[in-house]
Image 1 (cartoon, rainbow, N blue to C red):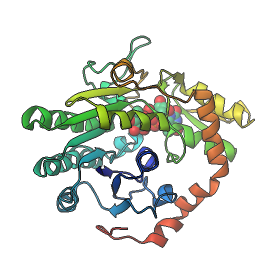
Image 2 (image 1 turned 120 degrees about the horizontal axis):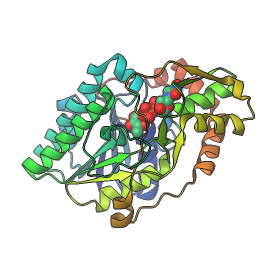
Image 3 (image 1 turned 30 degrees about the vertical axis):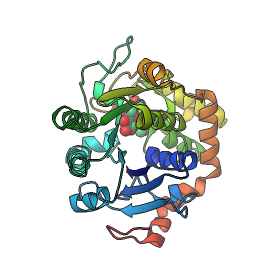
Length: 336
Ligand SMILES: Cc1cn([C@H]2C[C@H](O)[C@@H](COP(=O)(O)OP(=O)(O)O[C@H]3O[C@H](C)C(=O)[C@H](O)[C@H]3O)O2)c(=O)[nH]c1=O
């Protein structure tokens, strides 16, 4: 199997590249990543010398590069590449449209041209919008995105669907709830709060802190994608979620407790515009049809995550200082 993974230097992508290369050492993996602020080769150090693994620096919007890669015997594309931070999408929506919509279209066109066996779009539950106090998102929930980020992901998903309906392409879309775990960029709630707690900085909680997210340990997301890429039925969407809903306040309190720090660090700040109140995933379809089951309970997962950030403080320091990036000094199209 010859796999092209886009965005494989980011948080979920890099965890998945390592998961796949450990589980299927005979697969050939090409990782195409633009190395924006959120992607870093530091995340892949443990596998970067493996003979079946190749890194290519480049953007999914670069159609000639994408075409060159897809033309080299790729069987399957997994599209993890995305601008993913809601707050940034409020500042700069266009960047999100370019990467998440146009970038997806570039990949789809190339996959179609080279008649690839499969295309898997890694998406998000945010495309469904926001829930009230009850109910869950199923695969049949209408798309109702509320932020430029989620609208751009919904746009990408609809393009993927259209290439299945129009051109008969073998596609799957996965929609996962909030992930946490090692290597997550500290702009997202959990790593941001861990690192700020460790340095006794105030913890900014938007609004009343009662917004609810359904948290899943990143490795469980990887195992779900593994099943979908191998067994997903063409044209199907699969929701992925841990059935583990927590308010943001609960999350922050559990981090404070774990690190023995006072609640006085909590700092309520102005709410995020368009802030979705609650996400909750119904993952019955992937559980019953593909036999997926998450392995990590939240309590163990959050402890492992905090431990990882404690032991890898220098990971963040090196990324912030740009040390690792400068030492690699890659140009677009460079292959290592
Ligand atoms: C960064 C930050 C966040 N928050 C709140 C806002 C949300 O209610 C919650 C999680 O925020 P975060 O930005 O980490 O994640 P979401 O906006 O839920 O979106 C995330 O999960 C989905 C599935 C994706 O698809 C996104 O790519 C991913 O970023 O914490 C705060 O209260 N303070 C903060 O400083």
